[in-house]
Length: 99
Image: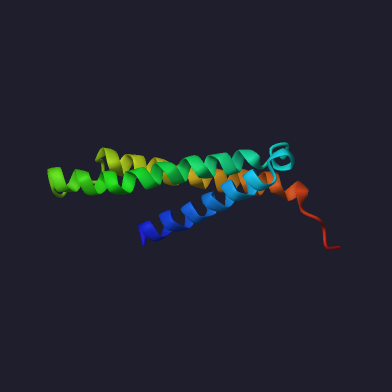
């Protein structure tokens, strides 16, 4: 279940990269562009932590929840959570009202 979330955030980060590269001049001036950058950073941290966790367990066996790969994975999750909150808060003014 955890790595399903990593996969979803990776897809969201890939969409963010695609949108930012396609509309580079226009999107970089928007306030929610910071959320795209945070999302990409968080997804990268999570993608590195997965194989790192596998290698850690291969070398040291089963461990507690405080191993370095687990802490890095938690950091990536936290960065992505902050990216979502920042993105939603900053995109609301750009949304058109349907009223």
